[in-house]
View 1: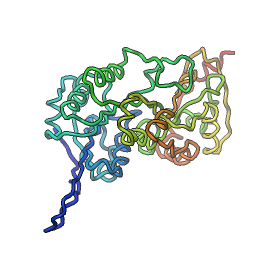
View 2 (view 1 turned 180 degrees about the horizontal axis):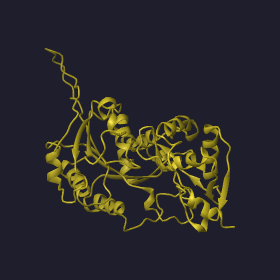
View 3 (view 1 turned 135 degrees about the vertical axis):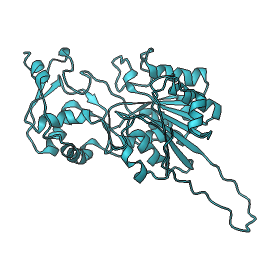
Length: 353
């Protein structure tokens, strides 16, 4: 049931015959990674980030076996993170217990756990929390979602924004922090893109129309802001808990996004510029709904201000403007220009005067 690309961590050895005594702090990290989607690249990028963190001496990814190993980022595990052990598991198994999970991991314990797979405190999700409790882990960091927020017209949405109490992510947070009593942190990201992503919907929406000379049906007024964040910057945010673990646990909840916000219309202009085509934005009445538009019709965005103030996070190192050059090349390489498209829903909302 377990498949591994193993590389044994190289540990400092005592010099032969040396009598000098010293202590070596060993800290192991476990990343629980989903099968793909919007968060699909995060485990990979987090592992790359942690490899250079002096607090971490070994990394294991517990990977949902439902992933497609021939697609990114999973296809790059062996070449790009060869020193990371990959263990496959059925993370959709709602009967999985902590004992089952620990058996898969060969009874190894972990000091730091990042859970980028669970959608609630059931099955494998509960097993992660219960295992972290048994391991006496120093920190359990959960990758939740800003989608649980119910905004109240304060933007960017602060961490105190009301949440959907019925959401599985909220139930996970409560179980880990309150019932299990773990040192716990939860990040709430939104709209992630990256070079090894396996979900491209958000920005592709713009290019799909631009390269075909179609109008961009954007809900009025088009000045709504969006947080589109490079996966490398998200990984940096997730790793920032190691900068100040006590402050991370005290705050508990952190929004996760870029500090370089753009408007819906600005994304359109940037994409048109990199594609070298004319831009035709047509705003429609937002009360008609999303149609095929990839974002919400109203403002719905977060910022990393709390992480910057509490965890010494330095802000995003990547910008959408700079990243769109490689993104457009990727779009063309994925067959974006030639794929069959229908814009019927766009035309419906634009036809309403």
